[in-house]
Image 1 (tube, rainbow, N blue to C red):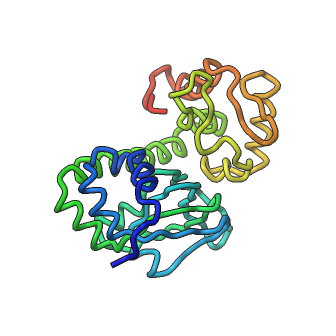
Image 2 (image 1 turned 90 degrees about the vertical axis):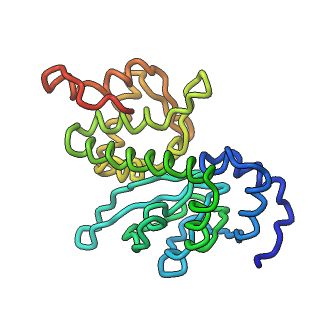
Length: 247
């Protein structure tokens, strides 16, 4: 059995902020914690191999990039940028197959992990966990569908606007950005299928227009309505009918 957490209360509070665990009772959470171990990954670490694939992870702090790369060109696309409360890899958890993605810690990461077989057991044993797990899986599938739609249907300016809008923290009236606020332009490019120079040129243009502002490497929205219009403009250019209004 894994050693007991010395700060079990604080770990439970962090888990309660996760959509996967927020509805669980203290009894169920305490039972799950007995099967977790705590891990730390340094920024820039790119773990690979069976040890990672055979464990189900929950992020307590920091950000993790999940992406795929073309070995011939070196081009990278980011599939998910995960933060505190997120879990990975939920698809491998279900089908038992290795997921050919690259993992990279964008910050120093603190995580909990448990064997995949144990996490599968929770889905069967705890109906309340299953009720949270299915919507979480659905949200990740929707994010992949949005990414595929953006790459196929929209120009670079629209894709960048939609990316920013997806990461607005709606709990704050000032609309601060969540997860992507301080990412380098290269990382933003990987999230929308383009390169650093294109993102840099677009953000500079928006800054001159007063739509966004960059302060000490942190991106902030100045004119939300203007950004919303830019997110819809390529749709309007294709006959005025919105085929995808999900941001």
